[in-house]
Image (tube, rainbow, N blue to C red; front, side, top):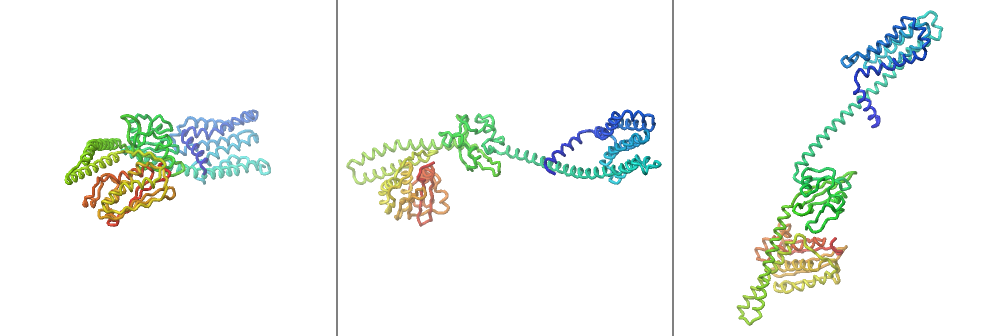
Length: 552
């Protein structure tokens, strides 16, 4: 059956199930009662002549009794087969109506037997009993005509013989159709039961899913292809209520009524670049941090988003509240900046006085001690500078069109003295006019860190090579050394703040472990990356890769 046919049959079954047994019996009896009334109204003269016959009156009375029984008997309390006494009484009524009137006046009323025959054929009786009744009932009705003297040559004989055969044909057709309908009904009811079970299973899984989502401590929201939330958990609702947003259904809509800020809490995120819209367009997001809301109610959120496969599209987004962690990190950064600033103020005064003292005529021993103090003070100044740079949450950059080779050459010249003191040969291999969009100050700081590290980590002398090249829209700056190298265990951690290798400590190489962390930040803020290749005892190669067109 098609879906439309199943729907129609389902409606019929629901209607049949809703009406009571009395109504069903009355509906089955109503056609015969109406037919008798129509015949009475259509041929009143024939009925007037037939009224003198007592059997005809009995037929009328039997029809009235059948109608009254349909109305008054409690069919709901009786067995399912009790109602079949009504069509049996109808066959008696039709026999009386056809054979109880004046001879030949109402022989056509035998066709009324079709109504009780249909009722019996469509009942739950076995096929043998139903078909036998459909043949014998009409045959008994026409039997007086068949047995009448001289009827064999009369046209009425043929009509009387044809009626039982027609009724049998009708019964067979009804029975066959009923069998098909019962099969379809069973299929439909089985289909309905299956759908009901699937619905119950779906509701159970929906309830379980809701419980699981509400038990999660992170805010979870599902969005459709347009970025509109369609499902969320209580943690997400509570998160929005905490920042002053009333309904999750209106969250992150394409307007500027509710502010969403970047990680540094400075730049406002445009509506079409907000997380839900990007996720709905199929973008996967891993650990991005945004600020939601303003003032003391603002929350720092770490976002993970995954697009949903399928025709409908959309995505699932989770928000983890990291406000406390972000605030702690900001407090630590502020402390580092304060301490570094307080370092630099007295150190500047110390260096100034040391410079003045060294301008005077001094004994060699005293001058040597002052120069040692001056070198250590300058190291502390550099340390304070690195601390302040590393404490930046997001490093500000001001890209402009620069000759990268010129910037790198200037930094190589600045580190040449340290290389000479460490007996390190500095090789510079730079192409002319390597133009890129970058911040010259930050690129210079990154080059300083890489070059000074290469010199420091070559304590027994060696070669440090600075080279640069451009290809496919990317500029690559490489600083290679022949120093102590980095072990496989240490390589994953060398970009962490304040991390120093055991080898560096053992060799007493100066530093606090901030240079590489700062250099990677510079690379990432330019839209690039910092890579390393190294083996213990074979030196290291650090590659600063930058987009030539500048940060996006």
